[in-house]
Image 1 (cartoon, helix red, strand yellow):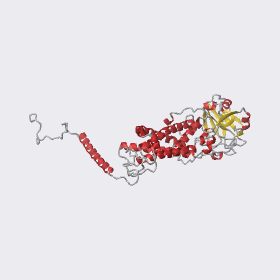
Image 2 (cartoon, helix red, strand yellow):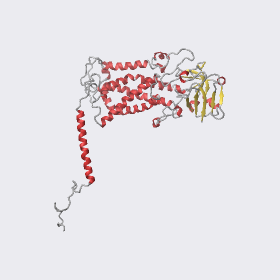
Image 3 (cartoon, rainbow, N blue to C red):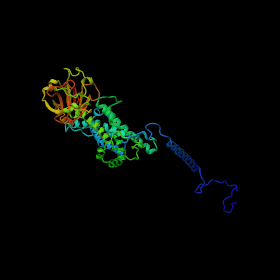
Image 4 (cartoon, rainbow, N blue to C red):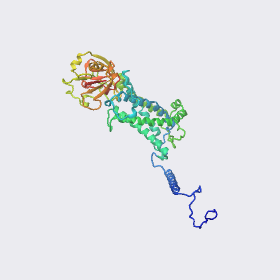
Length: 477
């Protein structure tokens, strides 16, 4: 019998089951969840204890010690002045660099594309124009010259924030780790882009791959880190710039130089040393370095008398005064072209709609000749003044090939296969009346190194795409 509705008493023979807080029997799932929670709590406690022990760990000797950095000039204001210069200059370098990439018409043909796996990074590509004819000379000249001029500013900015690179503890939390990673990407990106760019300017190819590929992808990684950094720091930079008057600082000499107030980022030295230079002097040194680099670099793009001052130009600044004495990107010997390739047996093949047309150089010279005054501008930033080229219009050759409305032309050189031994030009480049298959320059036959017996010259076209030693033109719809 039951006990009149009362719950069984202890010892009555009925098994007793543990009760949960809700008053229900605790099953296997609840017991497992409780065990996991207990283990998690113990793990969290151990982690907190470990963090506390690490936080109490003294920093190692050297740059991790707070008193190691003692310059009285470091502080948010000076860092922000350098940052403002880079905020103006770096986007301009990035935009002109992307325009340089677009000028190769990489979307037109794989022959033109040095980064075929760019994917969405080529979203902005467009048909490169031929007007104004000096467009590439301007954009690439600005890209290279500004990149060189900003080197002292980049170094000064890195110097001003170097205590941040040696924070202790290096990582304090997940958020702090992400911030450190973004800073590492920013610093590594700017160093990589400037170093590879300057090596390329000086034709010092020590890269573990194609310069174009490395520089292109590196630019996108760096600019992404740069945008994130600016978005996080723009407010602080603005407040720091307003904290001091630039004109007042420029009037303050060494005797009046004092450290900035302590800042939360730890840029201001805890135990500043006596100043050996004023902020005015620091700004003058950085600005003077940039001005000096401008003087010894810009002449290779601007030309004229300033070309003599272009001490950092990768090519001879004053090649001579003859009609064919102007700068050369690569000599025939450098790309493996010999006199045998362009001897009496050389012929130009023109292909299109119908049979292939074959011409000797004498036959080409007997046709109607046209003249165009165009410079040569190269990716290294150097360019020539306008040279007077003469030869046959590409549009006329397209008409001879039976494709007067050709949409592109494949230009092949006699040089051995390799980068820029072939190029594809767009329809707008073919039909510009200044686009020539040049046979002569400045009243003289082309020199061997300038592309004899025939070369392409197109307005606003990168120098390497003005193919030399041409032997075949294939016009396409």
